Length: 294
Length: 295
Image 1 (cartoon, rainbow over the protein chains, first blue to last red):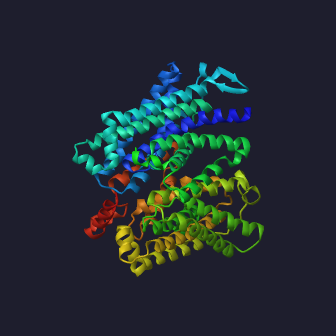
Image 2 (spheres, rainbow over the protein chains, first blue to last red):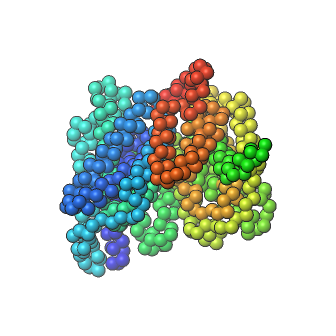
Image 3 (tube, chains in turn red, cyan):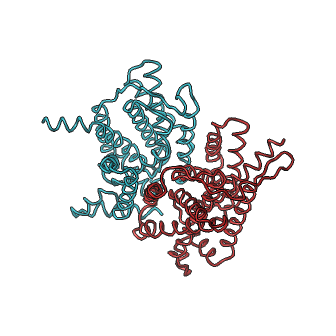
């Protein structure tokens, strides 16, 4: 029983980082209808921003803020340099996919140049050393903090999307870009804001996952991109609450398949599940949320 | 003549790679011509590669039979995943093919007795000759060229423009797509078999998401409406890293930058330059219109 509870705890803390990352992916997909392959690079960039800030001696929460803003700025830059131009030229969305992948490669190259290819670690902080023992289950303070921070981010995103004027604009663009333009929503600025939010979420999850495993490397983004795609299939494309649920689900599936089946089949179970879902219920497991798309 | 032979000898590796990637480019050209954004390339190639290597190394069958078998296996699996998945909307098709590639990769990683697990298979006989690749590539180009002029090709073009309209014109959209996807799988499987017998080594990492997306970028970079687009894209993306070999990291940065520049400034693909220059608005306009029509 305590093994089971331990896996639940581990799965939730891992899943919360997946959920934060996937919210960004699904937001871009839901609003702009493009699959942004550079999302993994924003994630990696955020982890490095946080690392640099922590190395400069900033307290963890401030470093986290730096990671969040850093990811957001990367998102805005990607929009300004690539996606805005493509939109202005009326290019096909495949072009965006190819361009964003090239952009991700470029960013990985830059990260290798600047930070080296070696794996780096966050400086020791108080969250890593403290752990609680509850009924045979070991809970690190770090895990609790990651979970809480993720929940705060989810609540902030939900609040932004549902209550703020920016959120209303984003939802209008997601509904239909032309309609948004007719009713006077500044589509360009709204798109940029969406990229900022998606980049910030990716950067934040980079710092969170980097702390959880205490590994930062230029290549961490690619694996995460695959997880992000997995989660948005689980949750339904462009479905933000679905991405949250899918993130936790994937985290739990991974942890449990390592504990009870075999560590080498961790990914196979996840992908097999996706395949099934796409065949049986392609709108995602949580499609009753569909009408609240992004 | 001597100089040419010397050139061929010293660059034979790159030439082989260019031919191989062009073949993959045409496979993707087929699926893209019916708006199927397939990420299954890696999976098909892995099937073709592992199947053919198993046959040549374990069963001792000749290379030609092994290649055909590998390609056939990939083609059959294309039919099996295509049949249910092609009925889904475009994005779901893309994600399903992505999941397929990852499932194949994970199986390759874990089925130690056949695939050698994470270590892969080494000492594969180098059976692929340059002329094999050239011959298959020419056959593929001929096939694509013939298709484009035929009833089949026109039906595909109609599907690309608008599948609903194509459906109302009594074109069986699903059937044509499935056929193209099977052809795509077959060609990718053959390419996988060739690739395996070219490099002495295959491992699960060779056939992941990156391989699939690279493959897509060949026809897209070269130009989706030009017959020779996939070759241009494949040669460009294969040769450029060799030219930029002086610095590993700088290479990635420059490659990425160049691809972004092409996509931004030549949205119809590299070959749309030609249309522009010769002053034939037909293709260029058509590209722009087609690309704009699909949001």
